[in-house]
Each structure stands twice: as C-alpha cells, then as structure tokens.
Image (tube, rainbow, N blue to C red; front, side, top):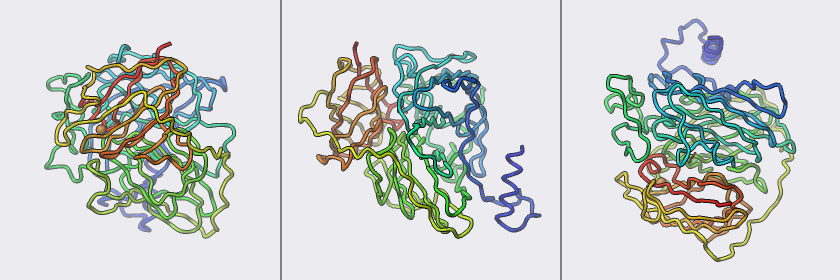
Length: 469
Ligand code: C2O
Ligand code: CU
C-alpha cells in the first residue's frame, strides 16, 4: 500500500497537477525501481536462505488485468543476491495447480538442483522443495521454472539472481532491469510436447487473460520493464550506476540502443574489456551489464524492431524506458573494473559435437539433429574433457542456444573469432550461421541444451548433453 501511495505521489509531482485523481488518467507515468530483493532468513553471512512461493496472481500490465502467476506476489519475482562462495538455499513452495520447478539460468549447479524434469521430478502442487547449492561464479543470472516453461515464464514466474564478486567496485547505485513481452503464450498453441498440464474444466485458466484474446489485445508484443509499461527512472546527475539487463521474454528479441552503450559484462560476468557497441542485442534468456555515467541529460532506452525471422525488421523504434536525471552535475569518471584483458582462445579446428537446428518457421515442429525432445540421442563427454561444439542453423528463424550446467567460450561466429574472450551460456545463432563453442565439461549430469525461444523448446528443440564421471 505504501509503495502504491509513493508511486501515485511521484506520478503527480511529475505532472504538476497534484490534486487530480490519478485514476482519471489513461496512462499515468510509472516510476521504475529495481525489483524488491528476497529477504535472507539466515544470520550466517555465508548462507543466503530465501523462500519463494509460486502462486496465482493478477498482474496489471499497463491498463489491462492479466491472470498469471507470481513468486511472493511480486512481478518480477524477488531478486536473490549472493556472493561468490555463498551457499544459496531456496525453499520453493508450489501453490499453483500445476507442477513446477526452479532452474538457475546461467549458474553451474549440481544436476539434482538444476530444476529440470529429465530424470528428476517436478515439485507437485502443495509441496515444498528446497534447492541448495554453492554459487561459484559472479554475474547476472535469473531463475525461472523449467516445467511447462512456455506458460509459466510468460505468466510471470521469473526473477533475477545476482552474484557479486569482492573484487568488483561498488558504484553509486545499481539497477536491475528485467524485460518481458506479454501475450506470447497461447494455450491452444501449446504442443503438449513435454509436461503441458491438463487444465481443470471451469478453473480460471491463466494464459487466457485479456492479452490473449484478439479482440481485447491492445498490443500483443508489448514490453514491460520490471512489470511496468514505458516507465521513467528518476536519477541524479553526477552519479554512476551498474545496470543489469535480463531478457525474460519467451520469444522476443531486444535490439537496444541509447546515447552511449558502455557494456561491462555479458552472460557470465565481467567482460575482458569495456565494449562500446552501437546496439545491444539481448535474445530471450540473455543478460548484459552496462555502466551509466550520468550527466545532466535525460535519455531513452530504445528497442529497434527485431524479428526471429531474420533480425532487423520493419517497424518503429520504441522507447522502453526513460532515464530522467535531476541536477546538472557532470558525468562522473568511469569506475575501475578488474578487466582481465583476455583474448579469445584459438579454435583447434576439430569438432566434437554438432547440433543442427531445423524447423518450419510457420509451425511448431522444431528439431536438433532431426530429433525432437524427449526422443533424442544423448551426446556424451567425459568429466574434465574439453570439447568443441558446432551449432549450425539450417532453419528460417534465429535460435538462442542455451546449455545448462556449464558456461562456454565462443570460438567463432560465422567464421569470425570474437575480439575478446566471451564466456556465455546463451548465444544467438542467426539464420544460416555457424557458431563454434569451446566447452570444458566440469559438471557431471544430463544437461539440457536447447533453444531459449520457449515456443521452440516446447516444440521439441531441446536435447541432452551428458557429462559422465
Ligand atoms: Cu533459461 Cu533451460 O533455461
Ligand atoms: Cu529456436
């Protein structure tokens, strides 16, 4: 309640008409902040213990109400924050009518804690399961269900997981931005390929809210930032911010730009050097970190139209959020990041595993090496071995490839080695492109390897890579 009151006040301060009821406005300005953090229930400084309760929730997306799901009633779910070396304990209470799980996207965790249902069970309705593991790498990660993901993630089950390293400087402020696009999942399009639950007749069926019926859909591809449509972020000139970006949408890419992109990290923590790209492409599942060195100028974060059917697309660029700076102090100096300067490893030229992506852009049949999950051939690697994976996209859409349990190094994209060493867990493969990855198999398990367009994963574009002891 307090929080809402504060939002209303700020909204009115912004428009200068403090007495006019906010309800009378079609689209009141919205004030952005980082998602509230999970409460650590453990006094031990080396243990982070949090509770997440997955339950139905009514989301307000712009002016529409949207029956969905949430963790602890929050959209996005609570941000979990830990430091490298901490033990993370997460109690997941399933108050949904469906099975669910938690997957720690981008973190290497023991197989039994990975939240997949290949050989391990889901958390049943009414049950609580405790995930527990040591966090071993710094970076911006996220959590989401890995069961009926196309429905559950789209309807609001996701949150940020931040792992800090003691060697990294602290900036004046930090901002977590989770982007999501609404109305992607349609119940009737679900393939039922793995684990799509039956729906109870007569029950409220999340996924069929106003954004899912054509007549009432104002804009099916509409984006939210931390659950808000076109919010404003109030900040002060002269301050430095570390900004962590996560694309949590099922199927929509973000081709971002703003006045000056200063990228410090990608999927797996700090880059070897500062990058200043013109645009920042975030495929579904991808993360990036940037620094904002704020002077007195306001600026907008824009998304260019981008399509899985070939990238740059027709349409209007649109402003996802606006950064409003108060005061006229000069931009602060850049912080000193402990960049490693590491160059990309050289490509040994040999290939251990090839994954060919195929499918029909108009349909829901998606394959890796001609196979649909769960009827797949399991590729195997020995623990401690190093392998080269080659991804070949022979389909008419792009695919963000994601591997569980490991980070990989990008050796080459379309025959070109990256300028610096790139450690990722999710990498977009364009149409007709070949991407080569180096993988150090250091985690035993049956790891999911799949496209992170959730409609493609649900349509079969998922396989298993086994690391044997
Ligand atoms: Cu983000 Cu297999 O998941
Ligand atoms: Cu795909």
